[in-house]
Image 1 (cartoon, one colour):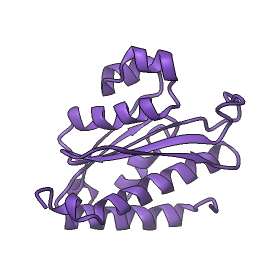
Image 2 (cartoon, helix red, strand yellow):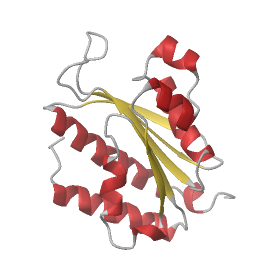
Image 3 (tube, one colour):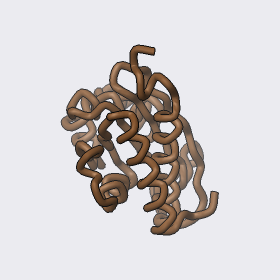
Image 4 (cartoon, helix red, strand yellow):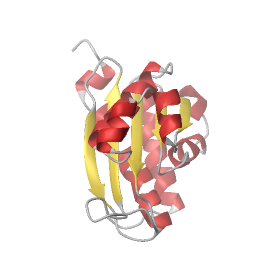
Amino acid sequence: MLVPTDSDLREIARATGDSLLACHQTLVTAESCTGGWIAKTVTDIDGSSAWFDCGMAAYSYEAKQALLGVRPQTLEEHGAVSRETVLEMVSGALVNSGAGVAVAVTGIAGPGGGTDDKPVGTVWIAWKRRGGYPEADLFHFNGDREAVRRQTVARALQGLGALLSTPAACHPDS
């Protein structure tokens, strides 16, 4: 994936907002490695108050537990950068907001913090709509800290677009 520019991110955010509006949904973000960048990107769009509920930047273990309901056992057994953690983050974001759709991200943006098992650029992203099942994908992004974070924001928003393109997202009873 090419590293998205500010203009690219704005375009993806605008399309995400259009999809949320069309589906009469609002968005909540739960962000670790992006530190609120997804929320910033979507709120840069005029009129985002019609489709953005709130964002939670939860960097520490304690914040993930307090704000998003991530279980201490999950963090101890799997670590912050794991499928298990991001699934609990995305579900907790919906529980603790009025939104109908959530995205959560956790990863290692670098330059430090990577290991052989989880190198710099390892990112988990999860998406969920209220009443639905969460989905999570693992990504391995290249580049420096900013490049990893930009790619994470873009993939998180693109994943929302894919989620909102399903009939169940706009019509939960179908």
